[in-house]
Length: 240
Ligand SMILES: C[S@@+](CC[C@H](N)C(=O)[O-])C[C@H]1O[C@@H](n2cnc3c(N)ncnc32)[C@H](O)[C@@H]1O
Image (cartoon, rainbow, N blue to C red; front, side, top):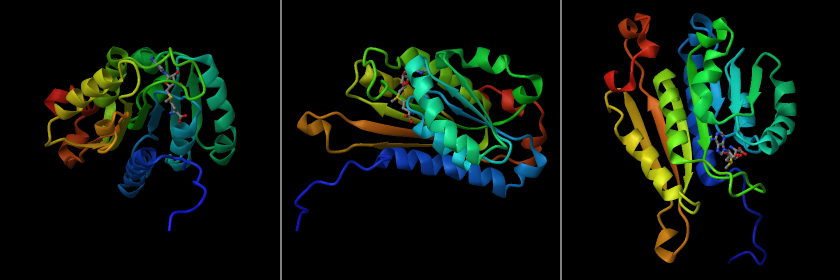
């Protein structure tokens, strides 16, 4: 029998839960591989901070001493995320959190402005939740070209066993084009080096609704020889 009153929408959504599981998997792999001891602490990036839910999750599963970079183009989002992150930060005093009110297309500049010892750190995880700020200005939303600039930068830096997650919305202005652009980029990643998964609403568009989709990109583990190669993390994505 159906319940008489509907349940409140569950948070995180099904797709956000999948994204979080993939990001947590990367963090667990970092720990299990012994990189916690042998490598520099990693960087985790939330490229669309919004209300800070994803960033708070990333911080909760970050390896020790990690650096969390959060970026959003809107001051309102930065404010909301800073508030949401306050308790997560108290739980993880070992990690450093840096928040930037800038567009994620500026990530290369942001990274270049980090102290030299942090610039050397491997990138373990990155999350994009595209579109607009829930409860905010719907005219301020992510755009395919700037999303790709940020995504390309993070793809090039991602360490083996690291994961990037992109949550797309086809109901937004430009959303279908943005999803296609991200998907084209992800689908071109060489399968020898990348596992790319696309999970999409299958029953919404047929009835005139809006679909959401999640694109996960996991960089596959490499051999010890490749890991020793000092230029590995800088190698263009197409070549590895
Ligand atoms: C769906 S919300 C993100 C939700 C967030 N991840 C959370 O957990 O609450 C999308 C966010 O992307 C931001 N945004 C739009 N264009 C951006 C850009 N070029 N760079 C960074 N953030 C951008 C918006 O301001 C908005 O806050």
